[in-house]
Length: 135
Image 1 (cartoon, helix red, strand yellow):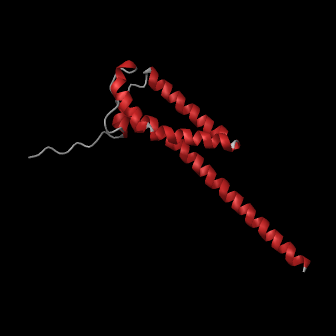
Image 2 (cartoon, rainbow, N blue to C red):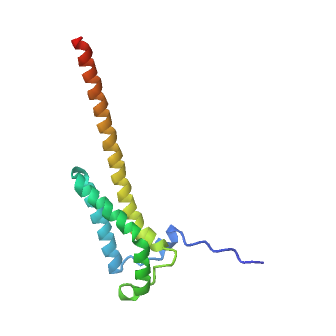
Image 3 (cartoon, rainbow, N blue to C red):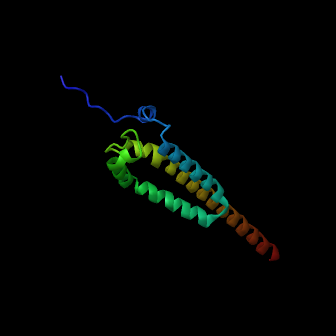
């Protein structure tokens, strides 16, 4: 009888096997907290928000290359080899939090766009009513 195929480790398995006390993981967590704070602070500064969004998307795009580089050099900064060829670890601890931030920004942009469209329609109706009133 054939052995069943092993599926890649899931979220809980990867998170349970991770030594969160390693300095580079603490630094990564601080980085993600700072990214989230910048996401929140950038709501009033549209250009900063666009730059922040593009940087995060660029980092997610480069995650595969970062994973390969980290897999080759993990002994320089880590006690354990976390960087698998499938990219599960880097996807969970690096890309996923960045993608959460980008989704927050996209939702804010959609919300802002809907508000502007509502204001525009209200203004158009008001102008139409004033025009009909003059006649």
